[in-house]
Image (cartoon, rainbow, N blue to C red; front, side, top):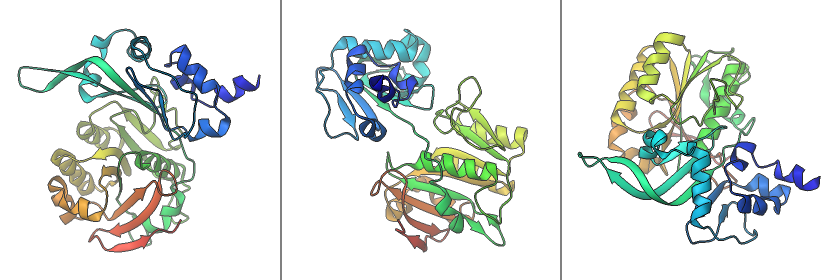
Amino acid sequence: MLMQTVANRLPISVRNLLPPGVQAVMDALDERDLLSLEEIRLRLGRPLELVGIKDHPPFMIAQDHLRHVLAMVTGSSLYAVDQELRRGYITVQGGHRVGIAGRAVLDEGGYVKTLRDIGSLSIRIARQVIGCGKPLAQYMVDERKGLLPTLFIGPPLSGKTTLLRDVARLIGDGHFHSRLDRLRVSIVDERSEIAGCLKGVPQFDVGLATDVLDACPKVQGMYMMLRAMAPQVLATDEIGSSEDVHAIMDVARAGVTLIGTLHAFDVEDLSRRQNIQALLASEAIERFVFLSRRNGPATIERVYDRHLREVAKSWR
């Protein structure tokens, strides 16, 4: 009975992907380890790696183990998920993401068409951290302007999406700041990681006044939500291309506040990104929040204004 309770700490949608041998390794972990687990990495001919856990029972990964996970992820048809394979990952129920590495198959234009001969899989576990966005309210809400458009910035696995999800929830519930009423939030969830929708229903708590457009390219999705849902706040993940920047500036001109995420290591790295120079020169974003993993995912390190002047740093 105890084993069943501990095993259930692993999200069921992740557990169902795993071959029996890897499930047995999970069953041997204690509750604290399971709660610390961030990624499950399976590499052909090498030991299982559990990111976030220092010690765990050894287990060698064979071809059958990779085939099992791929069959569960793809419904036994790689051809059915060619579009996702082209991006190198597939998002599964609950917002968990399965990264895939193998041999790239190119089309006539030299672009990746799909992946074959899969040799590595990385199952990234998505978890909701209720309340992690609350400390930002004092920096993201202005007495005169209201909610300020904000980007959450950091390296991979720094908790950007986790923080974005919680801020969207707080705003959509009307609990973000005492001066801020409940606002209509639209989430454009290109990778199905923010809300983790299943058949149109968010698996994460994203707020009472929040609408989600799932699995839609974010530029198209931003314009679709502007026209269809009349949001007051628009949230999306992984800003980076010049097309993303132009869409964000259009969102700002429409009077909608954007909150989103962007990959960068620090303010110097951000300043060097050619694709976002127009964004930095505009007033479309007024807060830049830098994250790290120093005290775990979503550790807030520094907050800058639109001129990249420091507003706050390292308060936890």
